[in-house]
Image (cartoon, rainbow, N blue to C red; front, side, top):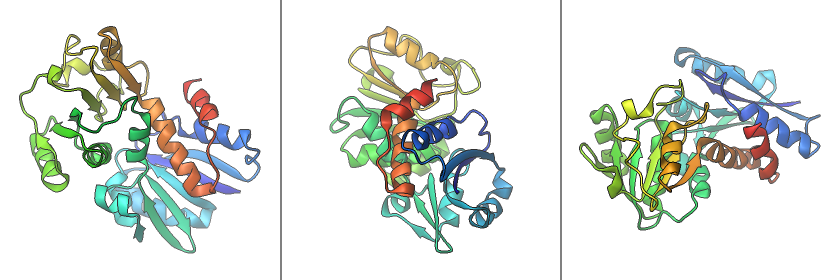
Amino acid sequence: MNRLAVLGMPVGHSRSPAIHNAAFAALGMDGEWSYEAIEVSPQGFAARVEAMPAEGFVGANVTVPHKQAALAVSEHRSEVAREIGAVNTLVFDAGETRGENTDAQGLMESLPVPAQGKRALLLGAGGAARAALWALLREGAEVGVWNRTQGRAAALCAELGGRLVRDMRAGDYELIVNTTSVGMGGEDPFGALPLSPDSFAETQVVVDLVYAGKSRLLEAASAAGAQTVDGLEVLVRQGAASFRIWTGVEAPLDVMREAARS
């Protein structure tokens, strides 16, 4: 059995096991491949990764808060992972750990319109934000970055590009991407983010990477006529890219979407 897992803390809410196991079943690969969730603390992350190959694991996805730690434990890193400075996909091969990043690809493939030339607002400065900022700038968007801790946003912009945003009007942006975890625990996103329910317009695209429950952010954006992309679509897209890296097989997107939303 080729074992795979998603490593995170918390990780119980993850839809990745359902998505990947449904894909394996649809392709008749479930007798040889399996996928599970493993909760691991930051203190135990490196040791957990080191032990995985001996337990039959051939790879792993990495989620909050371990994406930058995953870069550090990777002996070989893809160019994309190195430039982003974060890893969300690990491959264990011939006694070595390879780090990849499919978050950027997943986000770009999820957008209903090209990012080129768009004025974009990025909320957050963590591992997912790094991938989003790298991808948006690479595609030719003009990106403003906001984070509750301004120092982290400033450091991210200094490293990858973009500009620090302190006071802003959401209506000035054509694309808004929330990479923070605000809303994951059911809290009101409008109490923690520099947005209000009347911030949105029908000319905008709004992306919320949070997928634990209904996104109040996207509900308000949709009510205003904006195009919306939820975290499950981005998860499916980046998961499909990881699936291809591990197996060499094209992932069944429709099957993965159905599993993500069931």
